[in-house]
Amino acid sequence: MTISMGSYHHNVVLNAQAESKQPNGDGSKMKMYNSVGPNPRVVRMFLAEKAVDLPLEEVDIMAGVNRQADFLKINAAGQCPALELDDGSILCEITAICEYLEDRNPNPPLIGATAEEKAETRMWTRRIDLNICEPMGNGFRYSTGLKMFQDRVRCIPQAADELKATAQDGLRWLDGEMAGKTYVVGERFTLADILLFGFVDFFAGVDQPIDETLKNIHAWHGRVQARPSAEA
Ligand SMILES: N[C@@H](CCC(=O)N[C@@H](CS)C(=O)NCC(=O)O)C(=O)O
Image (cartoon, rainbow, N blue to C red; front, side, top):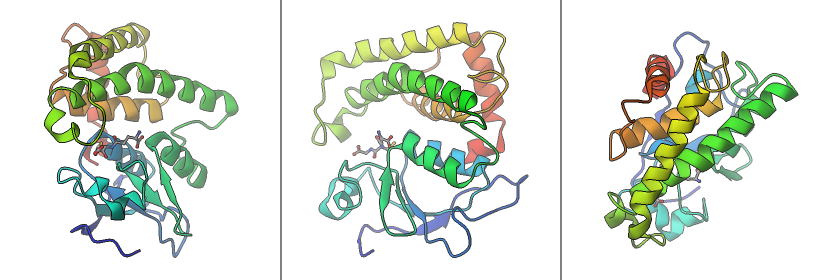
């Protein structure tokens, strides 16, 4: 693929405890268009948990390269990450990418090993995405991130505070649901944890700290932060 975006290549951090493997068998040409921000990190963490070694090509989203014609040919939505498959086709949207990676690399299961486990993980992932990640991300775009996003997407600055409060409502509800659990679905570490961690960890460092009264979320955050994949 001939795109010019001042990019360079490096490989995702691996889970040191697991044996490194290629995503798609020997000779795979799969790679991921990567950037700063919570969305690519979710996929990098997912890969690290599975000890899958994948080349990353950096895209400078701060400079808006992702919104220019060359990158729009890769992802028409103009966002990162994007996964390029062996046949050159492109897969976008982080939960869809993780689903694909799980299908290609079932172990360790991060979505589930049975129909019931998979459905449970998808249920929590969807709740977290809709009730926490989306309002959190838009709350940021419409306030702290306004300068970066105002010429890229429709921004609604007057909604920012309410969106941030909505995300906090979602976190408070989840905090209650997490009582007595190690991870979001119980004892299994899953995509739901990785998604939540990617967003909460990023936005806590920007403009949406985790309320100190959310003890279960804080304890969970510490457990996930301690996993080697959190370095991805
Ligand atoms: N729904 C998308 C969201 C992707 C997204 O918002 N990525 C951010 C980086 S964390 C991005 O590309 N931001 C730059 C922009 O939107 O211009 C997904 O699931 O992959």
